[in-house]
Length: 308
Image (tube, rainbow, N blue to C red; front, side, top):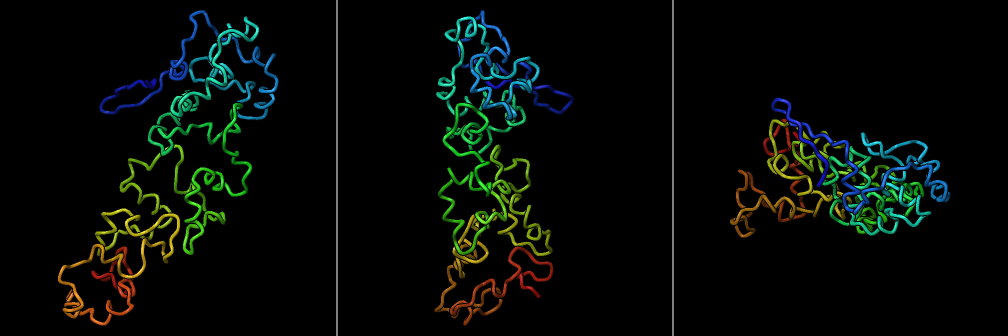
């Protein structure tokens, strides 16, 4: 169970983290009652290779970083109190690297977030939570027991790091119309927060991500297109790449006719008097809806989204 403490101040509820957050991680183990913390300097006497690995990293024991408010830092924040291990000449109780590698993804994430508290508050909503992926799978260059992925520093384009696992997306980025991620014009992290999912407080969820770069589509407009204001951008657009211009899910009129469809709308009826305007000769040919209805996201001058 997470070490959260709910503090009620008036009508506001503040989520705080208990100082004894280390129990989140070490609670998975039977820690001997006599075990005490001895400090990373004792670990360094035998594990010189690991000390060298961390020497110039954020996790260097010399930085004294650890679980806030607990006094636990360095090696023992992950491996537990080492007194028995030190007194036994390396044979006493300790949480070994092999044991840590055997933990589930969520358990390994709890080990990291006991110190990285800001990540703990929303990791449960991240796309990686519950998938077996943990912090070390991406930050392998920051933990000495390694990772299957190459570190981000090995890549000139930072998005190529993500594509090690998300290989299915690479094909989309090679389509004729695409977000230019492989070219380095934008990155996966510009749209995806890998530590958390879409902001639940955003007024329209996924759309908020798209509108961060495409604010001109947000309106408000005098004449709103209900399909835009009430649906996700992904109803019409593919986010990574498409065979069709403007990253549309499909080309031609099929996209519009998914919503703008009438049972009596048939060629035999001369295409009807649809919208008080005959579309005969238009839709029967190669004309596309948005050849005329150009302001498809919304308009300030035309209720039919014409651009004049």
